[in-house]
Image 1 (cartoon, helix red, strand yellow):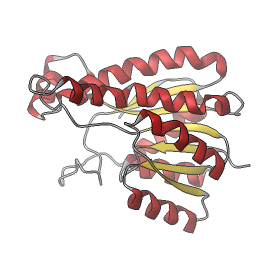
Image 2 (cartoon, helix red, strand yellow; image 1 turned 120 degrees about the horizontal axis):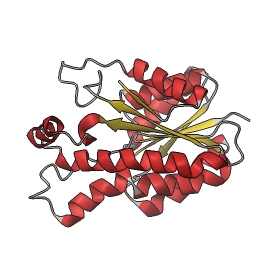
Image 3 (cartoon, helix red, strand yellow; image 1 turned 60 degrees about the vertical axis):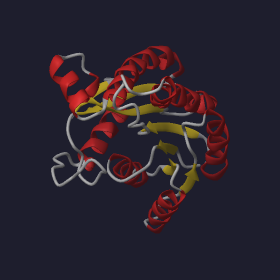
Length: 228
């Protein structure tokens, strides 16, 4: 039975590169995003390359949708061995003007949605050979005046807070799950990734390089953080 990676928050850029990388390494690939057309097209393209893949349209901001989505992935592809968390929300850009509900939604995707996915897949992962949770993060979380200024000028204050919480959560999960054999790691992306919605011709980071870094963290299972 093929090992399975579940890619949550699938889109162009990093998550596509992760699907290609892990698919080439022999993993079955589950693609999760709200956009059903996007994941269907991407899954068909992977299958055409000889990769076992499944489209799993779901909104991970809806906590009640996560367990059924993981169950569907398990049924279609087999037990979940790896989770790649690439989901985020760009809401609450101005935390002074944002409603509590809007900010809570941004933080939930970085915390509760990720945790609910881990909980749903953990029975599989505890039995897997090389289980892991791999998290994409951004440098906006850094508690530095320069990065605070960037978060405000980009109208990305909610995302900055979410990234800070997610950064801490990676460390906590790494410690909590190490006795279960689950390696938890993040790649902090400090820049614009080519081919993403943020790329307005100024993208400087190759998503394939980021996917290779995730693979190294996963394969070596020593470090929990890397920055690109």
